[in-house]
Structure formats: structure tokens, C-alpha cells
Length: 451
Image 1 (cartoon, rainbow, N blue to C red):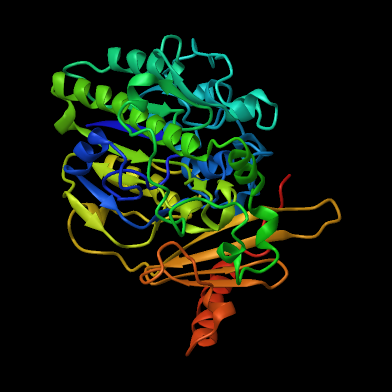
Image 2 (image 1 turned 120 degrees about the horizontal axis):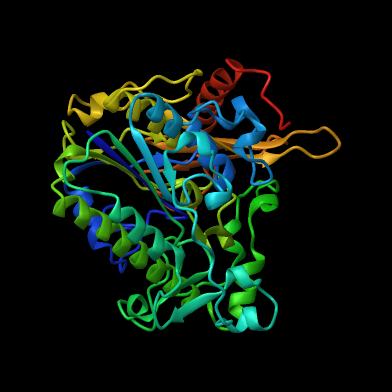
């Protein structure tokens, strides 16, 4: 069979199949979900592009490789030219590997040529005139701009999509198509037609309490340990409030999601036109989530649900359509793909093969997944925080001992830190999760520092 390995950058759970935003329009992701196994509880191992993509594409957790932040790349942990990534392994397994767009971090600047038979290099970021008032005033950077443009002429996502579609042909076999969409990454600039899908005033994100976002709402951060403020970018909220652009910012993200969805639809159309849709393993994932003022935080870079929950779907030959509530990680993609399509990893993988779930054999014995975020200051200390997500709870512990515990069933937007608010058996629940987290990390201690 063939493999479509499709990554959508910075896509949180605001897609119709996951219900993350009530107004979002993603007909093609819905179309894919109807034929796929959809994982309702899929999480990034790190809430940042480079370490999350490195972990996914090499199948190893950051605490095993030392790739924790966007300051490091996969080359800091792995030698080039050895075909160690998933793409390289599939090439060794006899697949013709063909790639376009952002699969590894930094687009075409971040890939290893030895992994690919062919990779589209003739793309670039188009520079648009400034749209946002906040960007025009210099309070947000040019890469944080947002708003509509007349068309997508020169947009590299569209160019990559066209290029890849030309390489999907009837009769293809053993092709590995890597397809990386940059939107909805900032800048949230896409054609006007995708803004027209949404009303001028959109609903506030479901995780925002009240009918509007208030950057000074201190109740939103009640009960948080002080270490959490180190991660949360709250300045963006004040800037958007100052220029009256919060609504426009959210609307631009929704439009960017719909734009990415439409380009994915073109690839699905091409698979159907060429008769390849039933002969192709489709893997759809995003590298991490995104925040719009939940806990007053913006972007990613935290260990809360909105920054870590991602879409993850598998569809193709022998895969049952349905939904799974098993907690899974992007680390599971590598072992699952080779479990479905063959190939042999050249190093130990951190994740689990989800093939039993894909075959409809029921859930696997997985109680939780772990994610990490933090840094290593020059003084040699370790400012790392770890979070454990089970079906029932999220438990987080920071480097100075601060803790968070959320009831994920009753409080999906993590408004109430049970550690701070107390309640029956809370300490016992937290201690149980901390023991599980320590057990997992102790297996690989000492944790690897960045090179």
C-alpha cells in the first residue's frame, strides 16, 4: 500500500471531529474522520514545534534525546544521512519517499535529503502588507500578523499541495507521501473566502469563562503554582485587548484552519480520483495545540490541555473506523506506522504500536501519557515540568514542587486546580499519579540534557 503522512502545523482540537470550537468548519477533516480511527485523547510530547516533530519523526521522547525546545533541532540528537527518521526507515523498507511542506521543523531547511527520494524545495514564505493594527504599531511582530488577503497566490501551502497532488498517480504502490501544511501557524493570513465562512463576531473559545476574553481576569489563574507563569504568554492578550483585535485574532485562526482543511481536501480528492484512497494508509496529525487566552495564556508552550491536545487519525486498508478514548501520544505514530506498513526502527522507540485499536480489537493497556516542557538555565539547574494525562485526570508537577490536578471529565477546560482547592482524596490521587510519573522517568534516568 501507499502512505499519506499528513501534518497540519499548530492545529489544536478546533476541528469538527473533536468539537473544540462550535463554529469551526472542517468538512474534509470530517470526511476523513468518517473512514478513520479517531483518537479523542491524543497529546503532543512537547508543546513546541521542533521537539514535538523530532519526537514524532524519530519516535523517542525528549527526556531520552535532549531535544526539549525550538532552540534545538533533530540534528542535535541524531546523525544525518543514517535514515533514522520514520521517512528514512520507510525508504529503507522499499517505499519511494516524496515530501512537500513542513514535516520536519523549519520546512525544507530542516529535512535530511537522505530520507527522501524527492522533496519539493521551490517554496518560500510570501511577505504580505501589514494587516493587524497591533502589528502595524510594532507591538506584535510581523510573523504574528493576521487577516484576509484576496487570494493565495504565492502561498507555499497551496504550491506544495499542487506539487504533491501531481505526484499521486493511478497504479502507485509503495509510495510514502509526506505532506506538511504550515497553516494554521502564524501569521494567520489566508484568502478572504475562508474568513467569509465565519461571522464578523465569532464565539469566544469554549475554555474562556464569560462572554468575552478579559486579560485581567485573575480568577482564570487562581490556584496555579507560581512556576506556571514562567510558561504562559499573557502579554499577547493585553495587546489584542488594547487594539480591540481579540475577536479578529480568533476569527483569523478559524479561517486558517478552514484553509488548511480545504488543501487537505484537495489531496483526498486526488487519492479518490486516482483510485488510491482504499490503497493508502493515511496518518493525520498536528505537532501541538494552541491557546487563545485560556488561563490568560496564548500560543503553545504550556502543559495545559489546550496546548497539548491534538488531532490524530489513522485510515486505510484494514483499519476500522471509529473512536478511541485511550490516552495516546504522538510518540505512538512511528511504531504504529511500521506496525501497519513494515519497516524496522534502528533505535528503541518510546511509544506503543496502536495497531490493535486500528484493527478494532479494543483498547490497549495504556493508563496515561506524559509530556514535558521547560529549559536548562546556564546555572545548571533543571527548570522542567512534567504532566501526566490519564483518561480521568491531568496531573502536573513543576521543578520547584508546584502541582496541578484537574478532573478531565468534569472540568475539561481545567478551570479548577484540585490541589489548591482541596477535596476528598485529592492528595492520594496526586500521590498516585506522581508515583506513576516518577516510575516512568526513573526508567530512563538520568534525563538527557541538551547537547
